[in-house]
Image 1 (spheres, one colour):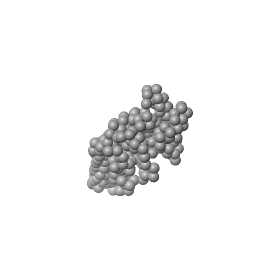
Image 2 (spheres, one colour):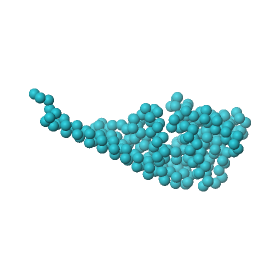
Image 3 (tube, rainbow, N blue to C red):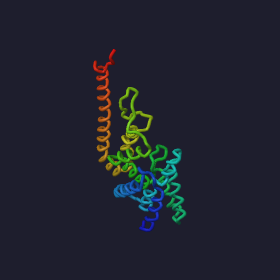
Amino acid sequence: MDQKTYSLLEAYMLRCMEDAAHDREHVYRVLYYALEIAKAEENVDYDVLIAACLLHDIGRKEQFENPALCHAAVGGEKACQFLLSHGFEPTYALKVKECIKTHRYRKNEPPQSPEAKILFDADKLDAAGATGIARTLLYKGVVSEPLYSLLPNGSVSSGEGDKAPSFFQEYKYKLEGLYSHFYTERGRGLAEKRRQAAVAFYSSLYGELSSSYENGRAELDRLFSSPASKEPE
């Protein structure tokens, strides 16, 4: 891929990106991760890989406006039409489309080509470790979702089995288990190096919050039951 083609794709990506947690810097990180992973893979078409990385999240706006839509499917179609409208070969446009279409984790439609698997892993790598924690917290703030939910007994929920959205729910539902869903050995190795940072942050935050609720409620109960707190007759 030459600089002119890269700049064309980059400019289109920049026009499409509005989501704070999936912004242009996320796209660049995914591209850089993909290039690192690709060094350990064989038969990689870098023209397809770079285009797919740059354009993989261009469907985010449509999904944000209509959650029933899948940004991967929308983005794949948008990328394909953009490439065709600028004179790229249909075979190339379809390869890029397939990479983008399968970069979002779905059991019924896994990535197939080397480029699609690399994009998938690079995108998941940006959800791993401290970076993944930071991005999740940023997104939760944008959509006004809380850090945690409370259990019926008033204690802080770990997020396990929660239905209501929160940072802890997202960690348990998605972030904690993503390390087993990599297709490339290099991607898996890079993710494992980051895992402990995410575990340590979650464990520390949960410990701080749950202990503050437990200790605070116990202190309130003590104060309410003390003779000094009783109303005079």
